[in-house]
Image (cartoon, rainbow, N blue to C red; front, top):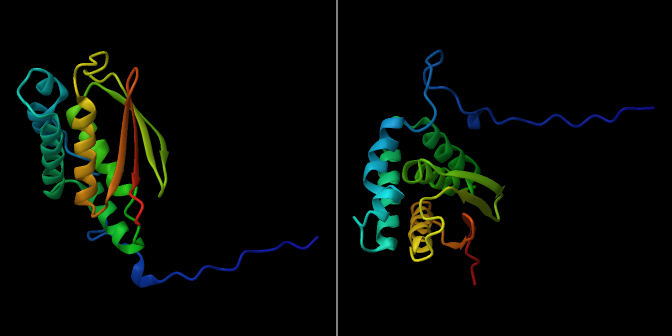
Length: 179
């Protein structure tokens, strides 16, 4: 029986990423101090205590704080996500997912979230343990929706966001279809 071999893949050396400083360790991830600073101002507990009046504005400002913090020095992962998207031309879901995860870590520090789907067509996740759970009078859907739409704007994408509240929040984000 003859074995079939896959043809060799040519690699464009110019497109390979290189470490700027070989041998130097780089920290990946968001420094804890950044998350703590954002959490003090934009956590869900701060929202529930009544420090903010408009949930949509509160969510948008929280995401803006995350974006501003990530643009500063120190977050190597964000730098790599941006660099890869430039090389590949693929922005969704990587940019959005990273911004959403940073936002959740900063504003929902005690909540757990599970990502069900992360594809170029959809980002679908579930948030469990949010301080808004069981508080139907709290319009937290508009808070999260506005934050995630702001993440799309930062990435140059028009998004469709749906938040369903039921023993946690199920969130589905997808690129808006062009007509």
